[in-house]
Every structure is written in C-alpha cells, then in structure tokens.
Image (cartoon, rainbow, N blue to C red; front, side):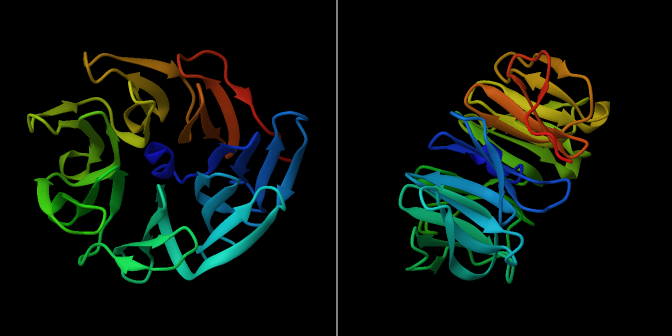
Amino acid sequence: MNGNIHNGGLALKQEGILFLADLRNYSGTFYKSEDSGETTLVDGVFWFMNPSYDSVYYSDQIQGNRLCRWDIASRTSEVLLDRPVYGLIRSEDWLYYVSETDQKIYRSLLNGKNESRITDEPIETFVVDRDVIYYVTLQGIRSCSPSGSNRELVSEAGAVHLIKLGHRLAFADKRNHYLLTVLDLHTGESQVYGDVSPSSLNTDGRYLYCANRSNENSIYRIDPETGGKIRIYGEAADYLHILDDSLYFCNRREWYRMSLSGGQAVKVITIS
C-alpha cells in the first residue's frame, strides 16, 4: 500500500469496487463494480486512498484536500479534518498524514479525533512500517516510533519516492542525479542503478516497478536481490499502482492495467 500512496493513492480496490481518480478532467472519481462492470463518476477527486473495512479514507482535491471518509454502502462522504493534508497512510487504527500548513507528520484515530504531531521538522515524504516510521527531511532519511519517539538518522541521502520492501528502502536520490538507490537497512550498504531514474516507483514486495525517466518513462521491473532489470512496457507511463496481481498506471492521463510480468496493457476506463 505504501507504494501506491507515494504514487498519489489514486487507484484502490475495496469491497468489490475499483476506485480510479479522473486525472484527465479532474471531474471526480470513477466507481466501477467488479460484479456488474457498471461505472459511475462520484463527486470528489480522491487522492491518497486507504481502505478500512467498508470505508475509504482519502484527501479530496475538490474539497481543498481535506481529510475525508467515503462510506461504500451508502456512497456518502464526510469530512474528518477541516484542513488540507497529503500523503495519507492508514496503519491499523491510526491515520498518518502531512499537514499542508507546516509540512509535519500528524496522526489521528480513524474518526479524525485525538490528533497529535509526530515530527517537529518539515518532511518531504514518509513510510509507515508497523512499529517504525521512515521519513525524509533536509538532513536525510530518519526513523521514529509511531508516536514520534526514538528518532534516529538512517541515511544522509536525499530521498524521493521513498518505499520499503523487506529490509530495504528504495528511492530516487536527488543528491545523486535522482538515480534509483536501494538501501539495505541491515548492512547500511546501498545499490545504485546508474541508468534508472524513477519518476514513479512501486513494489509488490518482491520486485520494484519503475517509470524510468532515463528511458522515456517506460516501465521497468527490477529485482533487488540480483540487481537485474527488464523493461516490461515500452510507452510513457506514470502513477504506477499495484492492485492484486496487476499493475495500474496512466498513459496520456488515462488508466491502463497489465500483468506484473508485462505484456499487453488494457485500458480500464474510456474517458470521453
């Protein structure tokens, strides 16, 4: 899920429903039933979508990026926090997000109550991994507990598109030409890919999937265990999301889906 969030959290499957934000016209969010195939457009451009039981938590662009909850059964929404946030990540009973006001991490319960600040300094991106939060500041990558205690410096790298897979952190290093870098948290060693510069980065827990700016934003699949890589989609792509066993992405602002192993990409929804 963290990989999807760092690509905008614009695609989500929950309770047999596929949610896709309209990135061509920004007119709303597509709501497609997997059973009937029926597609409707609901109010709100949903960013940073997170599932929870029968609900979806998100930041609504149309409502000034306020933190909202969508009830799937009633198809209604409610504002939980009346100020703009981004990077929303749900972890168990907590919602973590960055305030657009001061760029610091906060958390609240799923009802938007009991809010507290996690970081004292502005951050650029973050990942919640069970009992550890990894976040990026001007000084580098830091870590802390979910409550904000036990802060440590992990790396002095300038990370963009930070995601975690296993015992590794993967990111584009803005201090090294935005090259893909994979940091082993056990050894502290980094592997740098000199011909891969991610504009979008995701993982299925085994492989990395990258829209590579060094090759016209075509999609590469990378094996961090062996260092091997293969191009699986030859056209320009962005907003890489992984849902079930498929890769969802945008080409010319329309949504496509294909197998994680590559092959023919299929348009998910035709936008008029």
